[in-house]
Amino acid sequence: MKKRTINRDWIATARTLSHALPLLQRYDGATVVVKFGGNAMGDDEAMDSFARDIVLMQQVGVNPVIVHGGGPMINQMLERLGIRSDFVDGKRITDAQTVEVVEMVLSGRVNKRIVQAINAQGGKAVGLSGKDANLITCDQADPKLGFVGTPGKIDPSVLHTLFAADTIPVIAPLGSGHDGETFNINGDTVAGAIATALQADRLLLLTDVPGVKNDKGDVLSELTPEQIRELIKAGIIAGGMIPKTETALNAIEGGVRGVVILDGRAPNACLLELYTDHGAGTLIRSEKASPPPDLS
Image 1 (spheres, helix red, strand yellow):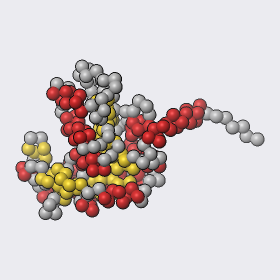
Image 2 (cartoon, rainbow, N blue to C red):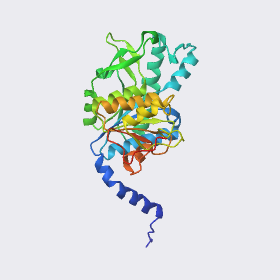
Image 3 (cartoon, rainbow, N blue to C red):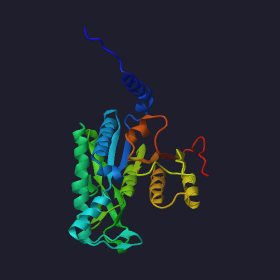
Image 4 (cartoon, helix red, strand yellow):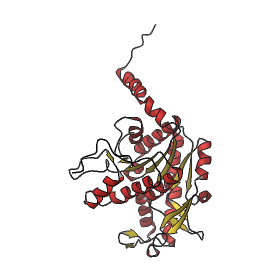
């Protein structure tokens, strides 16, 4: 008779699952919106790992919603087609020709790659953009920028239909104008608007940095909106982190229970945040952090 030995790794896995039980129960039935972007999107191994985590989240009772970006892929296609990009105050002018390319890349290449990755891990995902089922109706952000929009009205009914069918929505950040135009929208902004419309339990903003840092370079594990404003005023939060924290503030104000800015390059980042006591990245929520972080 073959003797069965218990591997230490198996014991560690079982212990991890046991310790995760309260958190698995905590998020059972919760809606979690994940903004997926950055370098992880261009790496096949990272994409597969992300997709596996999303499928696992759904398997244990979470309703995940994926919102993705695709800026680098858009730049590559514009360059390949010889379409020139002009900028105003660092923002791309999106004319009619450019927005066609944006839609082709986001709704086609990028969206379907994520959908395929999730389905390959045993999930059931459907790709859509904000134009589908009147999900996102846009206002023009600035006439000088052309077809760049900001979310005006969100109709999440199609997302609830997909939840009921155990299907994971994967959303490209595009929307329809009031006259049927196609608008390109910032992915973080779309994720925040969708999370607000769904009154999500968590909004996870996956980035290429570990989280919000203080002036010493230490990642702050938890912040309140008031503390975020202090850090912006002091110039500690600057550059590309400002729009992400502004998205977080708007989502919290709109009723999202918590927003986490975390490193999407880290293996199993979403699972670490949801199902471990220490979490990952920086959690922003209305409740006062305890103990309050050192902002110096």
